[in-house]
Length: 249
Image (cartoon, rainbow, N blue to C red):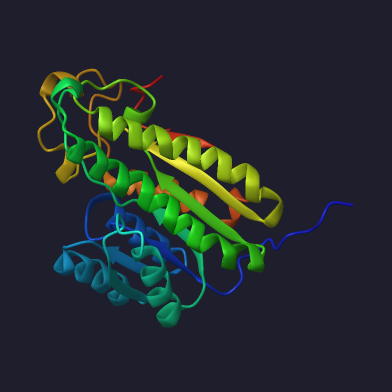
């Protein structure tokens, strides 16, 4: 007989990295609306993170701001430990923190390549590695990685960013297979053009290539992440959900 897993989550909290604005902030607020206490991580934007915390607490939820450079190998333990001390075991980890440093591959220097990989991929890996132990012991966990359609399809000038996001897809699928029997799901969302600070310079012609004929909103991505972090998604793991208005169809 197959081992039964909890159908409802045990006591614990969520951690959203890069939650001072955009998709991260919208996700933290969406998870709080679903009843999660939320660790709101930020790199440099303390005011933005506090605004996210305030939005959650004013709506009756619990939230705690925590800072750290996810590219620093020592940061994941410090970040998780701080959230655990304040809110309890992290049972939902949303790896959203990311940076860009664009340029054509023949002109891209090592520093630009390495920084993007270290933040977008290395940070997500180390945070996930640190979070998995408590999740496995609880026999319940949700990891959602914020990848990108750029990791699935070419986008000239973003070889470092595309490599980091394609790496996240591979990381998602592999870890999902490793921990599925422990009641832990690992999935990714792959947003397309979303109206955030990262996409303020998108040419009008590129928006015209989107079948929906508009950029998405952070709230639309957050709703997909909230589903993957919910009890309703207990049988969804190793999946990549594109949120791109039909761009990759």
